Length: 86
Image 1 (cartoon, rainbow, N blue to C red):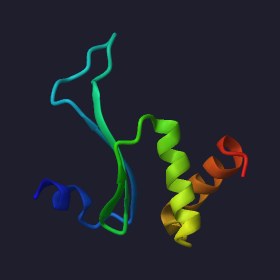
Image 2: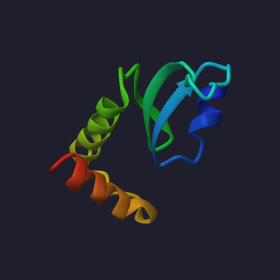
Image 3: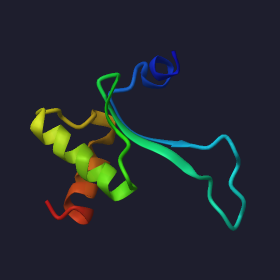
C-alpha cells in the first residue's frame, strides 16, 4: 500500500504530493495533495495551501497534546513563535 509506505516510521510530517512530472526552472511541479501525518497515520488531507497545512498541524498537536519531536523541537518553537505568533 503506497500510504503505508509513505507513513511508516513517521511521527510528524507535512506531506506534499506532486505530479510525477518534474518542475522546470520557471515552473514548479503541480501539487496534487497536501496532508498531515501523525503517529504513522494520515490524519488530514486535501489541505488547500502550505500555510493552512502548518496551521492545522499546530492545531492538531495542541488539541491532541502531542509533544514536538526532540530532534525538531527548536524548529517547531521557531515556527510557532516567529511565524504563527503563538
